[in-house]
Figure: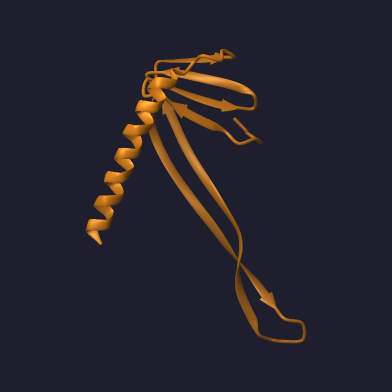
Length: 110
């Protein structure tokens, strides 16, 4: 799927909802089966007028994210009440706690 607008991904712990191009795709019992990203920073050759000295400078930076979500049923829906907001609050607290634990582990390793 080619997307030209930012995608929004939300989960309440039970469902994953992806909103892209004005449509919402809700998946129950979904899980991320693969995730990888790549950051490209191309170098550009610069030369001052009248000088033989060549300098390499950082060019444009681009990021590529490959995310594969698998699951049981993928509903394409225009409903507005797909996600339980109370579950989102609890799930957000859980995710934040996991992120804090990972950061603490990394800090201890250094």
